[in-house]
Length: 322
Image (cartoon, rainbow, N blue to C red; front, side, top):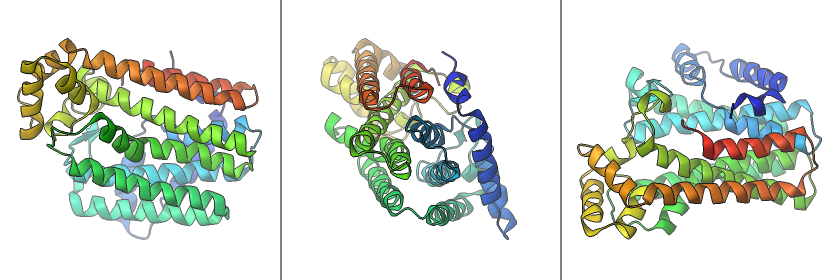
């Protein structure tokens, strides 16, 4: 499936959002603009602003504020990427060196703070208290999700329940905030607002499950990051948790040792173990369940091309290879 299909229905708005992002990057400090432009121009899927545009338009809302909200969400997302790469000591993102690898940790953290602050300035410009409530709560939950994940690094006793709590916070929450805030901006009926909120949550969970799956089934060239990064950092993701729970004693011991020690010296051995234990199929099936749940939520929305694009997006989330 070509991802362009669901971008096409909001192509003009997407271009306008890009223009807003460029204008809002302006700073009197050259290094702020340089790093900000570097990470934003790296591209990526821009799924979160896309969700804002599609959700608002599915409800029949097309005011300019929708584009400003989409740009706000992207700034917020980009600020978390800068911070995450420092926390994870990542060297590669979207096929390029990370900002921290290029300029160091301190400038990356501070420019992340700038983008975060700018997103709140843009949010104030929207003048919607419901939107501010949704996004400000989301930023707190995202931070909590990241800290929870950090506290579980090299913890081989992490359960699937805790893992789900982590990904709901660090990933799904911003998907949810994107769809939910668009509904709030459009003054949606409570039933439709809740449907879009739940859609964003389920889609975000499905998306992260596939991300964690691709850490073992993907390749660095298509992913734009180093395969096995999560394993190297000692992060107990679902493929690893399921292997320890459902695999043989040998497979479980191999994975447990890898999580506790960190590093990806035996990446091929781990890859073979998670595949043989059925952990990758388990993760893929769960991702499909969440994507189906997301699509089911959309029944509450009017039947139009934007709702159709949201359905396609949910299908793409689990069919993708990067």
